[in-house]
Image (tube, rainbow over all chains, first blue to last red; front, side, top):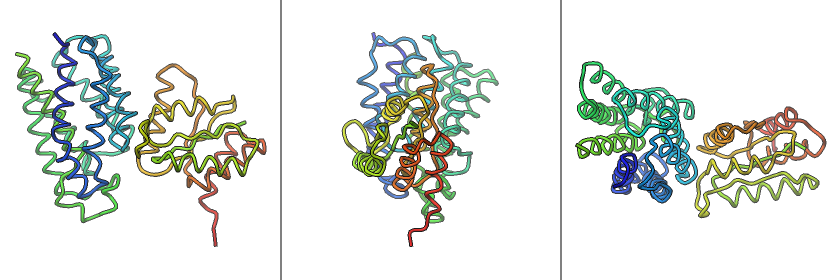
Length: 208
Length: 131
């Protein structure tokens, strides 16, 4: 039986790949039309590198991050690559995740993305999905919810974050060249980040 | 001699800029391109940049000159990859135009410049008026 982390990363890869054209279309509107293609290429390489026997969550996340750094090509490569590598550092040696581990993963991933991209919330980036998701997750856990319920809240908040990106001007990346014309379009990075959370939620729901 | 790494989304740009810089600074043997992805497509690859930094290092440090967008983020990630491996990295990213910066940096490096002066030479290139 494949390891939990392999199954979970497979679900992320599958969902990103299934949405390749959708993500690229979003990026065509405000970016350089490559987000879906780049992310699908990156995750296809990730699945080639990972083995179903990879049980160490930290090591698998590190391998994922290093592969994304090399294979994605666009800005999402160093951003997601750093996020996965930082998440790998806080889960080194683990084969199971507690609800608290997910708080650490969120914090590490967000810190990694901010270190690399120098962005804050409200700049029409993936952070506009991930930061509210992280906050919703932490709140649910502090109220005594389990991982599935907390991740459901995280996904809801990430989706709201994607909707919010439609209302604001991009100030980072290629989309910032458009200024006010970027309003009305949802951010591709926030969208792929939400897909990532949906896949993680799906993993925990089907894991039982 | 201070090494130079040229980072571009396009391997043709990276190779071409290196060719030009070597032409202007013929004794410089450590001007290393890190362009595009493995399969030749457009993009930047932090691992490729990390390998180029190692190749360019001749004991006096490395100045990285990059093109647009994600090239700076990938160069920063490359330095961290090497640090995570426990290597001592002496590399800086220049805030410089890729062609002019590379030529000025290469000339300064073969003239015996150190990291600071090579970095300054690259960064001053953006102030140079062409007309």
